[in-house]
Image (cartoon, rainbow, N blue to C red; front, side, top):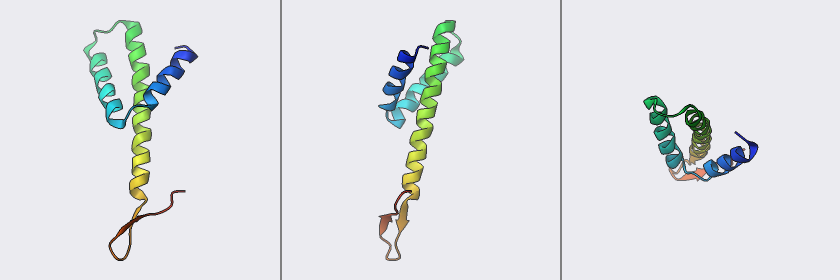
Amino acid sequence: MTDRKTCAMSDNIKSLSFEDALSELEKIVRGLEGGQLKLEEAIASYERGAALRQHCETKLSEAEARVQAIVQRSDGSLTMKPMD
């Protein structure tokens, strides 16, 4: 893929929510498993799928960090601890 296409795809993926990216990734996997794509389409789908997987992993890591930052005070109320 050219740098311009890679950059455009990356920008497009960055704007997706976790749920939207995961849904698209699932569609790509089904398409690849179906074996009906032409070689170039399969390669492009695989590349996009890899980028979507990375995006989903990043989103999950961010969510995990936010959840781990929630601290329960002795009075039972919740607060956020500063993130490093």
